[in-house]
Amino acid sequence: MAEPGANPEDKAPGFSSRASAPGRLSLDVLVSYSLPSVGFGFTGLLFVIYLMKFSTDVLLIAPGVIGTLFALSRLWDAISDPLVGYLSDRTHSRLGRRRSWMLAAALPVAVGIWMLWSPPPSLTGVGVVVWMAIALFVYETASTAFFIPYGALGVELTPLYHERTRLFGYRHVISALGLVMGLGAYSFIDQAGDPREAARLMASVGACLVAAFCLYSAWRLPERREYQGRGSSGILRSVSDVLRNPHARRLLIVYFIDSFGAASIGMLVPYVTEYVLNRPDLAAPIILIYFIPQFLFTPLWIRLSKKFGKKVLWLSSMWVSVFGFAALFFIDDGNNPLIWLVPPILGFAGGCAPIVAPSIKADIIDYDEYRTGERKEGAYLAAWNFIRKSAGAVTAFIVGWMLQELDFRPNMEQSEGTKVALRTLFSLIPAVCFAVGALIFSGFEFNEAEHRAVRRAIEEGGDRRE
Image (cartoon, rainbow, N blue to C red; front, side, top):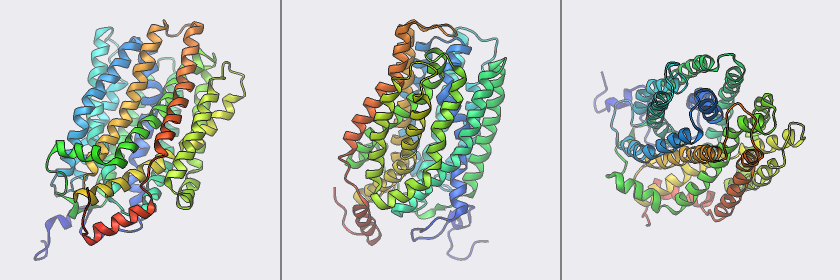
């Protein structure tokens, strides 16, 4: 029985009854928050790297059609993402406004993952296209219902400027386990005599991992009771507040460009290695040497962030990516030494964004609380989630229709025009995007001193500005 005067929510598993903001996060919280990234690293790598090629080369769906399906799924995200963000911010539940969503979405997202890789062999033509459309709808809807509250909960776990970088650094390192498993699953499918059956098997394993780790994380993580009911009073106002935040607007533009570059190298590696380099066996090694430095240098990024600041660090990594992607254009055969030199450099630079960007995002959400007096992590994560997925969809749409217009033929030798187009999509377009992103991000102005002043004003209940 609850003590007299106690709120029964205080007794709920995972609820924190502390009114004061938490400080340094425990190892248990760091690991519990990071575990879902293992399952999503496994399935997400397959999604980014191989789903497009699986659809064109195995399911024999026209490139333009599957690219369009990805794009259409983003139109649905334009509705579902802000809706979930708003509802998550406004949810009242004994289990918490974030954890209740995470628990409810864990199994549906696993079903969506399985469906993406398991269309019945009897389906062909329009039938398999319809199946993939439904699978994308189930997966995207369920993943939105999990990822937005999950990301929002990460923002709420600590208000400390550098502790947030540490949290997302831990998540990035732990996700390496899932990515390595995903790379092994990709190699298994690619070399299997029956890739459809191999894909179904790997999807089953990945779906189980996602469900198990998501449920465990949702059950173990603490959540601050006093944040319930502090979301925006209306969904349009919620979206408007995000767009009115000058720091958020700039960051969302930059994050879209960064995500587009990352999606490009992931999605096109199997095409470039098979149809440009004529060495499909190089796909897994290239991906591996790209990922190793991403995670190996995570402790360095965390330390450098404290010394030089988040902005300087991320901006520097963008310029390294510009020159790295440009260099990829000159890889035109399987014997070029740049194959082994450029991906590790890109991986080193690419390891900065997954650590620093979410930490900066958490800081600008505090700025929103300073301006409005509300906690709208869900609304901000909705915008973040939509941008991330839209970047991948734009990549798939462009790649799909360019391949179709250039007469791409799966499992055959390609024309020189198609090869040049693949190299351009793989290198020059991401290089230009990162350059534009770096120029835009150079004007970002919310630093550690300003964040400290905002936190002080929030905790003291001082006047807010518009």
